[in-house]
Image 1 (cartoon, helix red, strand yellow):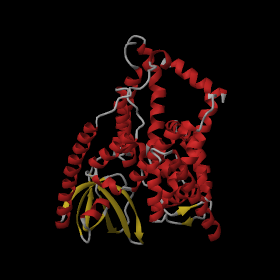
Image 2 (cartoon, helix red, strand yellow):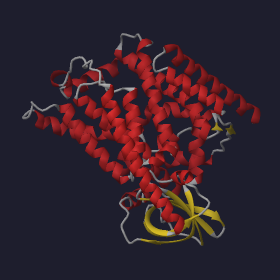
Image 3 (spheres, rainbow, N blue to C red):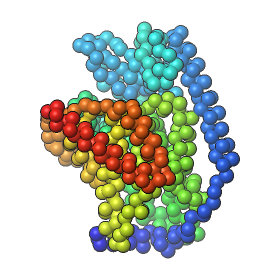
Image 4 (tube, rainbow, N blue to C red):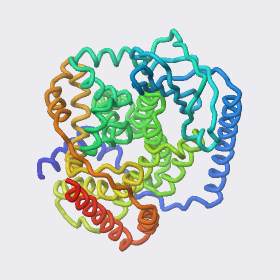
Length: 447
């Protein structure tokens, strides 16, 4: 524990955070309620505008139209047919079924023509089937193709490469990998989100900070935190463009931008109101996110993280900073894992005791993600292929149980009450632990 504290002290001294960047207390300013009302009104106007654009597309598709889209995934539906998932430039998801076998065309652009039937506008915001459809590939290089080929060349099995393509480029997981990821509870680590943003920013800063502070001595009047924050956001935005504005990563990026602006004004960064504004901004940008499960789970996860940060200080009365941080990290991952279970199981019913593996892997993710990233840059990304093989060949049994709607509603109400009341936060942890025990009982009885 002393080693961890020494590392923190060394890093602070190395990058002059204590000498040049230490700030006083945050301003205890109260942002006027009118300002929040103005922001919400503006977001509502943007939301209605984008919703109208989607509605015009919906009406046009009912009559039949052609449009450009990205092929997100395709897979065999029957022996002689393929199911293809398209996403157009407005974030609309459409599915088409085509005869024959298709080559690997995921990530390519296509000109699609078709109509939609038996699909109302509300369903259209989620996804629709497109009929009487044809598509042709557009001769345009996929911006991910070079990276994807670079990864594929390092693995003798395309399934192993698919895992890293999903981890780095947000590709769709093949069925064997989806089953293993579900059984181990690793979906939140594979799906690109805030975990990845934090890891990428850490990697970026580890490369940029030494160079920046070599120059900073000549421009010592510059605020290093603000400069590096801006550079980090530019880097994150480039990655966001690369992965085609993945909703979970988009939410994390918006929160990072809002946090940066708030930091510039020396206000409190971690605020439930800020999370609410960020979620509204993302939904205004793309109304379909209301029905995007990954986005909803991502916002829920951050909400639980904020609850932990709000209440954990009352329970970790430990003087040794290294011990306090270590216990806090372990407690954080266990509590967030448990608190998310009732919400996740409303959408996905699968349960396995092996999902507890996600807790230590979440703790180590900030090291593992940069490690596999660097290994692939060094063209030795195949090192963990044997471990992936062992996982894929293991027979995982999973029970199924959906969270009842009444329980979910009660649980969410308690979570919201936990913003203000400590007893409600404790109650939410007790309920989540009880929910886990109930799933474990169902698992044992179904073996």
